[in-house]
Amino acid sequence: MSEAVQVPGPVPAAAAVRWRTSPVVVCGAGAVIGVLGGLIGLGGAEFRLPLLIGLFGFAALQAVILNKAMSLIVVITALPARLLSVSHTDIASHWTIAVNLLAGSLIGAWLGAGLATRMHSRTLYRVLAGLLIVIAIALAASHIGHSGTVALPPIVRILVAVAAGIGIGVVAALMGVAGGELLIPTIVLLFAVDIKLAGSLSLLVSLPTMLVAFARYSRDQSFQVVRGNTRFVLTMAAGSIAGTVLGGLLLGMFPSLALIPVLVALLVISAVKVWRHQ
Image 1 (cartoon, helix red, strand yellow):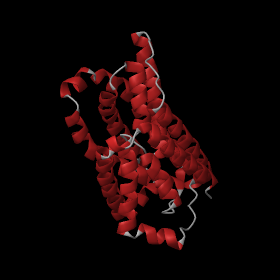
Image 2 (cartoon, helix red, strand yellow; image 1 turned 45 degrees about the vertical axis):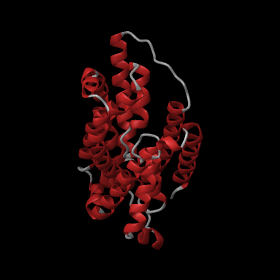
Image 3 (cartoon, one colour; image 1 turned 180 degrees about the vertical axis):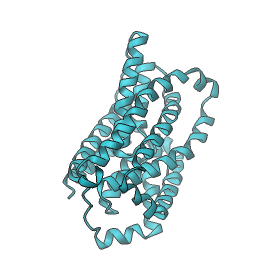
């Protein structure tokens, strides 16, 4: 079915082709994205997606699939380090949180990836632009706002967590991101856990969720973009990993109240450019 609706992206400009084949540019772009993500405790995939479209000239679905591949590499690399920073006992005692969210996010990831492969290219650009705005709002709310927790009966909390997981899984699959920017505030809001622990739990949810979306994308012909750009993916992912580590080390030098508005503005500007992309 996807063959009937997939519209090939425009032929990349000569500059975009040059950027794609330059290891310095690709790795450098990944590093910058990684630093931005590391400064706010994320992988930076939200910023990588507009760059894949705008600078490197990939069509919407191609950019989403490549972003998912790189997000998967970054999360697998970050998971051991993150688990070392939080007590295994704390994580084990909150395993039900990850299970509740996974019950929904795995379904959402499959549905979201399937939706992306069937969506008209121009529609997907519009959807991605809207989701970038959603991510910007979530980023601002989770770092600047001071929301408490929601008091819900246990059964209701489980149902809300599953529903939230479905929504987050859909968004993560559509954008090719890990979903931490949505998972972390959801975990804090629903389950009243420390934000550091919430970050580790979000990775436990993100990894299987991304694997499901990746498996769904692999069934579509557009997945060939990963095989055709393996060096690009590995080079940019390496830069993203290095940048994420550097961003984490620089975290204390940039107060969130000064940094977050800048990053939110970047996401909004990126959303406008993606919306207008032809």
